[in-house]
Image (tube, rainbow, N blue to C red; front, side, top):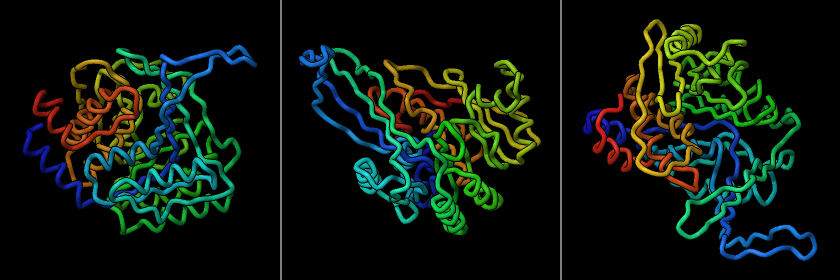
Length: 341
């Protein structure tokens, strides 16, 4: 992408008001000193020495954190946390970020705070190594009152935001933020502003929105179809864009991504060269953030995809953490590598 055009797009993000609707979780990193270890006298199991605890917003919070890094002016998270210690940490982490408006972020005793606890082994002259993760999730259906409150918050966004990013992170439908009631309200807003949706469990239950999927998620919309060739993926993506009458995107890891508009042929954007050790955690969320912000300021499909590939290139090179794409980093990467189309 032309450097001046990229700078203009990034500068325009400051005027945006964006909402992030979805499952906000707490990413809690336990930094373990590998040089200090012992065995438990009682169990004979290894005892790990935690030297530092880091907490940051995860899942939908990762999308939000990338929007912050991209310089978006105002961001409204729509979601919930539990009335527990993890909820306190999550709300504090969100409120510490610039431009965050928490008026639609619920604290409810009816849910526990979604938490990813990530033990991280740190050894001298070695890359951080993540041990087995400890998750806290909600396995029961989201209470009707919580769901309705979230749906009302989504409805109230009409006329007050420029675009919405949706991040559905739960494994079991209807146990998180993006319930049927919330999806109905998102469908109403989609005719007015860009609404981009990403879902861990697939987008089969979603109304016509801007879909962002990976290769396997696109194939899951066509049951029984094996992972297809690039040509078949393009055809499937074009059909999806025509069906939803919205842009549609599919990410292809190191192969880059494809995007399509209704009635048009799919376009491709390639990934950038790997420049050292990588950590892919959160790369997809940085793509989601970049696409949402770019579409909100009227970028073309190709420009949005190029910006998304710059964001992914930035975050994958941040090892041992869920990366954040920052405007200054995207400018530096683009200056070094030129067009990513």
